[in-house]
Amino acid sequence: MSEDTPLVIDPLALEARLQDQRLRIVDLSPADRHAAGHVPGAIHLDYGRLVTSAGPVMGLLPDIGAIRAILTELGIGPETHLVCYDEEGGGKAARMLWTLAVCGHEALSLLDGGLAAWSAAGLSTTTRPAAETAPTRTEYPLAYGTERVADRGWILDHLEDEEVILVDARSTDEFTGQAAYAARGGHIPGAVSFEWTRCMDLDRHRRLRPEDALRRDLEAQGITPEKEIVVYCHTHHRSALNWLVLEHLGYARVRGYPGSWSDWGNQDDTPIET
Picture 1 (cartoon, rainbow, N blue to C red):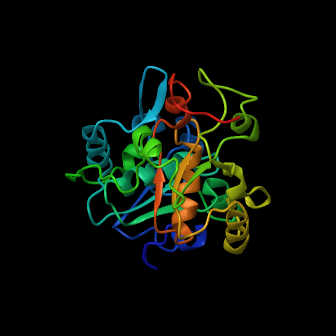
Picture 2 (picture 1 turned 90 degrees about the horizontal axis):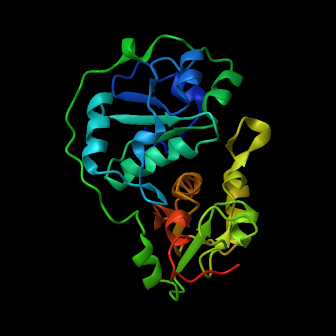
């Protein structure tokens, strides 16, 4: 990312760019939250359109045609600077940004702290319906890449690889197996726990924590920049924020696991630790 399109954008910096015609702001909050007030110019998108499921496995990447249709609808083309936010701390927004990054789109930003931080900065919201701010439709012929994705097979092939570290963004109870939302509970062997809320400063409207503090905590867990990192949670929703934080900090090789524990924990033969 460049200084012009930082991966994490401050509310005041975004407010200064609202008239930029290259900008598209996407709100992944629930529809009623969006209707009650949103960042001026923000377009609502239902998070469910970004993911698909297959049996018990959730949070999979949809057919690329579904993503192309969304981008056409939102008026997002190769030169568009996409800014996303949600109401929960950035998980849904980060999942959209990860999806576009997988496709090779470069100009991507998370609104730091979302709408709560926007309002706390004294910036105004609007209830203007999204239909009135809909941009011109455009075609964008994208394809999924592989550099930012790890599936079950890739992880199984790299379980003994000392250059790869698995980062589990779920709660401690899910990590240990005390809480199980799949056929089996626990975590992928060798994974370290870094719950996604550790990325947030809960006293500052869920903005990301200071970079120095994040680096210190990550490296204390062995999550260091020279490693190739795979982040996962239950569906790669929460862990999308971990992906974004690591990319923001300059980690060069970070992959997300679509399906995550809903895939791994619902297999009969995948190795598990508790």
